[in-house]
Amino acid sequence: MTDPSADDQKKSRRKRPAHIETAPSDQPPATAVRPPKPPEADSPTKKYEKQRPPSPSRAKKQGEQSARSAAAVKLEKWSDCMPLLKAEAFFLENSNYLTDHPFIRDARNGKLSTNRARKLVAESFYVVRSDLRTFTVAYDLHQGRKDDTVGKFFEFSRIACQFAADHLKHFQKALKLSDEEMERYEPSPRSQCYTAYTSWLVTHTTPAMIAVCYALLYPVWAEMCKNIVAAVQANPKYRLSDHDITYFRFYAEALDDMDLLVKELMKGADTDHLKSWPYKRIKDSVRVLQTYLVEFWDGIYHGAYCA
Image (cartoon, rainbow, N blue to C red):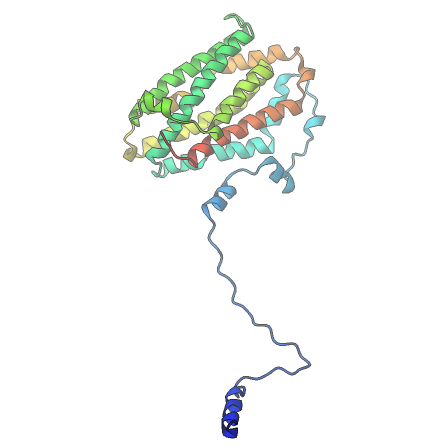
Protein backbone atom coordinates (compact mmCIF):
# COMPACT_ATOMS: atom_id res chain seq x y z
CA MET A 1 0.00 0.00 0.00
CA THR A 2 1.26 3.44 -0.85
CA ASP A 3 0.66 6.60 1.07
CA PRO A 4 -1.64 9.00 -0.95
CA SER A 5 0.14 11.98 0.48
CA ALA A 6 3.44 10.66 -0.90
CA ASP A 7 1.91 10.35 -4.42
CA ASP A 8 0.72 13.94 -4.25
CA GLN A 9 4.22 15.06 -3.31
CA LYS A 10 5.73 13.23 -6.33
CA LYS A 11 3.19 14.81 -8.68
CA SER A 12 3.97 18.23 -7.31
CA ARG A 13 7.62 17.64 -7.92
CA ARG A 14 6.98 16.71 -11.58
CA LYS A 15 4.90 19.81 -12.16
CA ARG A 16 6.46 22.22 -14.69
CA PRO A 17 7.88 25.38 -13.08
CA ALA A 18 5.63 28.38 -13.50
CA HIS A 19 8.19 30.59 -15.25
CA ILE A 20 8.59 28.22 -18.23
CA GLU A 21 5.93 28.78 -20.89
CA THR A 22 4.89 26.04 -23.27
CA ALA A 23 4.23 26.85 -26.92
CA PRO A 24 0.68 26.41 -28.24
CA SER A 25 0.10 23.05 -29.87
CA ASP A 26 -0.73 24.61 -33.27
CA GLN A 27 2.64 26.38 -33.53
CA PRO A 28 6.05 24.78 -34.06
CA PRO A 29 8.47 25.06 -31.17
CA ALA A 30 10.82 28.01 -31.29
CA THR A 31 14.26 27.22 -32.68
CA ALA A 32 17.17 28.12 -30.44
CA VAL A 33 19.54 30.65 -31.97
CA ARG A 34 23.15 29.58 -31.59
CA PRO A 35 25.87 32.20 -31.32
CA PRO A 36 28.12 32.33 -34.40
CA LYS A 37 31.35 30.38 -34.18
CA PRO A 38 34.51 32.45 -34.01
CA PRO A 39 36.55 32.29 -37.23
CA GLU A 40 39.12 29.53 -37.19
CA ALA A 41 42.73 30.48 -37.64
CA ASP A 42 44.27 29.19 -40.85
CA SER A 43 46.53 26.22 -40.36
CA PRO A 44 50.08 26.39 -41.79
CA THR A 45 48.93 24.07 -44.58
CA LYS A 46 46.05 26.39 -45.53
CA LYS A 47 48.33 29.42 -45.43
CA TYR A 48 50.79 27.60 -47.68
CA GLU A 49 48.03 26.72 -50.15
CA LYS A 50 47.04 30.39 -50.33
CA GLN A 51 50.63 31.47 -51.00
CA ARG A 52 51.40 28.83 -53.58
CA PRO A 53 50.34 29.37 -57.20
CA PRO A 54 47.31 27.31 -58.19
CA SER A 55 47.84 24.11 -60.13
CA PRO A 56 46.76 24.08 -63.80
CA SER A 57 43.64 22.03 -62.98
CA ARG A 58 42.71 24.35 -60.12
CA ALA A 59 43.29 27.42 -62.25
CA LYS A 60 41.03 25.93 -64.90
CA LYS A 61 38.24 25.45 -62.38
CA GLN A 62 38.62 29.06 -61.25
CA GLY A 63 38.16 30.29 -64.78
CA GLU A 64 41.76 31.42 -65.21
CA GLN A 65 42.29 29.79 -68.58
CA SER A 66 44.44 31.57 -71.10
CA ALA A 67 42.57 33.55 -73.77
CA ARG A 68 44.40 31.71 -76.52
CA SER A 69 44.34 28.01 -77.21
CA ALA A 70 47.86 26.61 -77.23
CA ALA A 71 46.92 24.01 -79.81
CA ALA A 72 45.73 26.71 -82.23
CA VAL A 73 48.93 28.79 -82.08
CA LYS A 74 51.07 28.53 -85.20
CA LEU A 75 54.73 29.46 -84.93
CA GLU A 76 56.81 30.64 -87.86
CA LYS A 77 60.06 30.64 -85.88
CA TRP A 78 61.26 29.55 -82.46
CA SER A 79 61.64 33.07 -81.09
CA ASP A 80 57.90 33.66 -81.68
CA CYS A 81 57.09 31.51 -78.67
CA MET A 82 58.94 33.73 -76.18
CA PRO A 83 56.42 36.59 -75.80
CA LEU A 84 53.55 34.09 -75.77
CA LEU A 85 55.11 32.03 -72.98
CA LYS A 86 55.95 35.11 -70.91
CA ALA A 87 52.27 36.09 -71.00
CA GLU A 88 50.98 32.66 -69.92
CA ALA A 89 49.17 32.63 -66.56
CA PHE A 90 51.22 29.70 -65.23
CA PHE A 91 54.50 31.45 -66.02
CA LEU A 92 53.49 34.72 -64.36
CA GLU A 93 52.08 33.01 -61.26
CA ASN A 94 55.06 30.72 -60.76
CA SER A 95 57.58 33.51 -61.41
CA ASN A 96 55.95 35.82 -58.87
CA TYR A 97 55.79 33.02 -56.32
CA LEU A 98 59.43 32.02 -56.79
CA THR A 99 60.94 35.51 -56.60
CA ASP A 100 59.16 36.03 -53.26
CA HIS A 101 59.33 32.44 -52.05
CA PRO A 102 58.80 31.77 -48.30
CA PHE A 103 62.47 30.73 -48.13
CA ILE A 104 63.50 34.19 -49.36
CA ARG A 105 61.04 35.95 -47.05
CA ASP A 106 62.45 34.09 -44.06
CA ALA A 107 65.97 35.04 -45.10
CA ARG A 108 64.92 38.67 -45.50
CA ASN A 109 63.24 38.74 -42.08
CA GLY A 110 66.20 37.14 -40.31
CA LYS A 111 64.30 33.89 -39.67
CA LEU A 112 66.20 31.49 -41.94
CA SER A 113 67.33 28.51 -39.87
CA THR A 114 70.69 26.78 -40.21
CA ASN A 115 68.87 23.48 -40.77
CA ARG A 116 67.01 24.86 -43.78
CA ALA A 117 70.14 26.47 -45.22
CA ARG A 118 71.93 23.13 -44.91
CA LYS A 119 69.12 21.40 -46.77
CA LEU A 120 69.50 23.92 -49.60
CA VAL A 121 73.22 23.13 -49.82
CA ALA A 122 72.66 19.38 -49.77
CA GLU A 123 69.90 19.38 -52.39
CA SER A 124 71.86 21.81 -54.60
CA PHE A 125 74.91 19.56 -54.31
CA TYR A 126 73.02 16.74 -56.06
CA VAL A 127 71.30 19.04 -58.56
CA VAL A 128 74.56 20.63 -59.70
CA ARG A 129 76.28 17.26 -59.96
CA SER A 130 73.42 15.90 -62.06
CA ASP A 131 73.31 18.98 -64.32
CA LEU A 132 77.06 18.78 -64.82
CA ARG A 133 76.76 15.22 -66.07
CA THR A 134 73.68 16.06 -68.18
CA PHE A 135 75.38 18.85 -70.10
CA THR A 136 78.50 16.75 -70.60
CA VAL A 137 76.34 14.03 -72.17
CA ALA A 138 74.45 16.65 -74.20
CA TYR A 139 77.69 17.93 -75.67
CA ASP A 140 78.61 14.40 -76.79
CA LEU A 141 75.06 13.52 -77.87
CA HIS A 142 74.80 16.37 -80.35
CA GLN A 143 78.37 15.88 -81.53
CA GLY A 144 79.01 19.50 -80.71
CA ARG A 145 82.20 21.15 -81.81
CA LYS A 146 83.65 24.22 -80.15
CA ASP A 147 82.99 26.27 -83.28
CA ASP A 148 79.39 25.05 -83.44
CA THR A 149 76.57 26.98 -81.75
CA VAL A 150 74.95 23.90 -80.20
CA GLY A 151 78.31 22.64 -79.01
CA LYS A 152 79.20 26.02 -77.53
CA PHE A 153 75.84 26.22 -75.79
CA PHE A 154 76.18 22.89 -73.99
CA GLU A 155 79.88 23.41 -73.30
CA PHE A 156 79.10 26.80 -71.76
CA SER A 157 76.37 25.17 -69.67
CA ARG A 158 78.79 22.49 -68.47
CA ILE A 159 81.43 25.06 -67.51
CA ALA A 160 78.81 27.14 -65.67
CA CYS A 161 77.81 24.06 -63.66
CA GLN A 162 81.43 23.42 -62.75
CA PHE A 163 81.80 27.00 -61.50
CA ALA A 164 78.56 26.60 -59.53
CA ALA A 165 79.88 23.41 -57.90
CA ASP A 166 83.07 25.21 -56.85
CA HIS A 167 81.13 28.17 -55.43
CA LEU A 168 78.71 25.89 -53.58
CA LYS A 169 81.63 24.47 -51.61
CA HIS A 170 82.15 27.89 -50.01
CA PHE A 171 78.59 27.91 -48.70
CA GLN A 172 78.94 24.27 -47.65
CA LYS A 173 82.08 25.08 -45.66
CA ALA A 174 80.45 28.12 -44.02
CA LEU A 175 77.67 25.84 -42.74
CA LYS A 176 80.26 23.31 -41.51
CA LEU A 177 79.18 20.48 -43.76
CA SER A 178 81.81 17.97 -44.86
CA ASP A 179 82.00 16.14 -48.19
CA GLU A 180 81.28 12.92 -46.31
CA GLU A 181 78.05 14.41 -44.97
CA MET A 182 77.05 15.46 -48.47
CA GLU A 183 77.54 11.91 -49.72
CA ARG A 184 75.57 10.47 -46.80
CA TYR A 185 72.66 12.84 -47.33
CA GLU A 186 69.57 11.31 -48.95
CA PRO A 187 68.23 13.79 -51.54
CA SER A 188 64.52 14.51 -51.64
CA PRO A 189 62.66 13.24 -54.73
CA ARG A 190 60.56 16.39 -54.57
CA SER A 191 63.61 18.62 -54.95
CA GLN A 192 65.40 16.42 -57.48
CA CYS A 193 62.62 16.16 -60.08
CA TYR A 194 63.80 19.49 -61.55
CA THR A 195 67.23 18.22 -62.55
CA ALA A 196 65.77 14.86 -63.66
CA TYR A 197 63.39 16.60 -66.06
CA THR A 198 66.21 18.79 -67.34
CA SER A 199 68.06 15.62 -68.27
CA TRP A 200 64.92 14.24 -69.95
CA LEU A 201 64.53 17.40 -72.03
CA VAL A 202 68.14 17.12 -73.22
CA THR A 203 67.71 13.54 -74.42
CA HIS A 204 64.10 13.67 -75.65
CA THR A 205 63.71 17.11 -77.22
CA THR A 206 65.88 19.51 -79.18
CA PRO A 207 68.61 22.01 -78.19
CA ALA A 208 66.24 24.83 -79.12
CA MET A 209 63.86 23.62 -76.40
CA ILE A 210 66.65 23.80 -73.82
CA ALA A 211 67.49 27.29 -75.05
CA VAL A 212 63.87 28.43 -74.63
CA CYS A 213 63.71 27.01 -71.10
CA TYR A 214 66.97 28.70 -70.20
CA ALA A 215 65.89 32.07 -71.64
CA LEU A 216 62.66 31.98 -69.62
CA LEU A 217 63.70 30.39 -66.33
CA TYR A 218 67.25 31.61 -65.77
CA PRO A 219 66.19 35.26 -65.17
CA VAL A 220 63.76 34.02 -62.48
CA TRP A 221 66.50 31.94 -60.85
CA ALA A 222 68.89 34.91 -61.04
CA GLU A 223 66.32 37.18 -59.38
CA MET A 224 65.91 34.67 -56.56
CA CYS A 225 69.65 34.56 -56.01
CA LYS A 226 69.83 38.37 -55.98
CA ASN A 227 67.16 38.45 -53.30
CA ILE A 228 69.00 35.87 -51.20
CA VAL A 229 72.26 37.82 -51.46
CA ALA A 230 70.50 41.04 -50.43
CA ALA A 231 68.81 39.28 -47.51
CA VAL A 232 72.05 37.78 -46.20
CA GLN A 233 73.95 41.05 -46.53
CA ALA A 234 71.19 42.93 -44.69
CA ASN A 235 71.23 40.50 -41.72
CA PRO A 236 74.59 40.38 -39.88
CA LYS A 237 73.14 37.67 -37.60
CA TYR A 238 73.81 35.08 -40.33
CA ARG A 239 77.56 35.75 -40.07
CA LEU A 240 78.10 34.94 -43.74
CA SER A 241 80.72 36.80 -45.76
CA ASP A 242 80.50 37.66 -49.45
CA HIS A 243 82.94 34.80 -50.05
CA ASP A 244 80.56 32.36 -48.34
CA ILE A 245 77.69 33.24 -50.69
CA THR A 246 79.54 33.35 -54.02
CA TYR A 247 77.22 30.54 -55.20
CA PHE A 248 74.28 32.95 -55.19
CA ARG A 249 76.34 35.90 -56.39
CA PHE A 250 77.51 33.85 -59.38
CA TYR A 251 73.96 33.02 -60.47
CA ALA A 252 72.75 36.55 -59.76
CA GLU A 253 75.00 37.96 -62.49
CA ALA A 254 73.84 38.12 -66.10
CA LEU A 255 75.57 35.67 -68.45
CA ASP A 256 75.82 37.84 -71.56
CA ASP A 257 77.71 35.25 -73.62
CA MET A 258 75.06 32.66 -72.84
CA ASP A 259 72.28 35.03 -73.90
CA LEU A 260 73.98 35.51 -77.27
CA LEU A 261 74.34 31.75 -77.72
CA VAL A 262 70.64 31.25 -76.95
CA LYS A 263 69.63 33.77 -79.62
CA GLU A 264 71.95 32.22 -82.20
CA LEU A 265 70.76 28.72 -81.38
CA MET A 266 67.06 29.59 -81.75
CA LYS A 267 67.74 31.50 -84.94
CA GLY A 268 69.55 28.53 -86.42
CA ALA A 269 66.72 26.21 -85.36
CA ASP A 270 64.03 28.20 -87.18
CA THR A 271 64.49 26.10 -90.31
CA ASP A 272 64.99 22.83 -88.45
CA HIS A 273 61.90 20.71 -87.69
CA LEU A 274 59.79 23.52 -86.23
CA LYS A 275 56.63 21.78 -87.45
CA SER A 276 57.39 18.82 -85.17
CA TRP A 277 57.52 21.17 -82.18
CA PRO A 278 54.17 22.98 -82.03
CA TYR A 279 53.56 25.65 -79.42
CA LYS A 280 51.61 23.21 -77.23
CA ARG A 281 54.65 20.94 -76.80
CA ILE A 282 56.95 23.87 -76.11
CA LYS A 283 54.54 25.30 -73.56
CA ASP A 284 54.15 21.94 -71.81
CA SER A 285 57.92 21.52 -71.50
CA VAL A 286 58.40 24.98 -70.00
CA ARG A 287 55.41 24.59 -67.68
CA VAL A 288 56.53 21.23 -66.31
CA LEU A 289 60.13 22.36 -65.81
CA GLN A 290 59.08 25.56 -64.03
CA THR A 291 56.66 23.62 -61.83
CA TYR A 292 59.53 21.33 -60.87
CA LEU A 293 61.57 24.41 -59.98
CA VAL A 294 58.77 25.38 -57.60
CA GLU A 295 58.91 21.85 -56.16
CA PHE A 296 62.67 22.18 -55.66
CA TRP A 297 62.26 25.21 -53.40
CA ASP A 298 59.11 23.94 -51.69
CA GLY A 299 60.83 20.65 -50.93
CA ILE A 300 63.64 22.55 -49.22
CA TYR A 301 61.35 24.89 -47.32
CA HIS A 302 58.98 22.20 -46.04
CA GLY A 303 61.61 19.55 -45.39
CA ALA A 304 64.40 19.11 -42.87
CA TYR A 305 68.10 18.39 -43.28
CA CYS A 306 68.84 14.83 -42.21
CA ALA A 307 72.36 13.52 -42.75
